[in-house]
Amino acid sequence: ICQQILQVDPKNSDALHGLGIIAVSQKNYARAVKLIQQAISYTPSVPFFYNSLGNVYWYQNKLLEASHAYRQALMIKPDYVEAYNGLGNVLSDQGQLEEAARCYQQAIALNPNYAQAHNGLGNVLREQSQLVAAETCYQRAVSLSPTYAEAYNNFGGLLCEMGQLEEAQQCCQRALTL
Image (cartoon, one colour):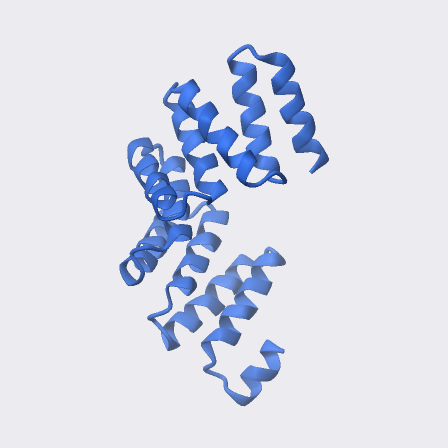
């Protein structure tokens, strides 16, 4: 459908972005970046496009580019929960844990039911050896999203660190079934 739209309207940013997302699903990241950047060049005011670009860069471990894209999204839409979460992921990967925590906390403040931000904050708190606080975050993440395998896996790892081996095993088994 996106290809057909582009035959009629070669500058249709939604179709270009859609093809970029398809390229991401095929792990063709170079093509995805090119298509999403094209979409942005035609419609630079859509924060979702920048967030998608940030995701593609993050998947490629291009953290500076990802950070820039997420920040662009937030400049356009300061209450963009997913962009705060994405930026938190990048900052966490860069070892900037305090700033990452602030991004996750901002995402949670904007949407308390956003499981990914609770999971991300749990990861940061775990890195900072704040295990009880991390446990609370992981509990919240899995309660909000009972099929969130990554959160169960992280929760299980934390419980193992805390010596709660039976509970850790249950979490890890749950992660494997999802």
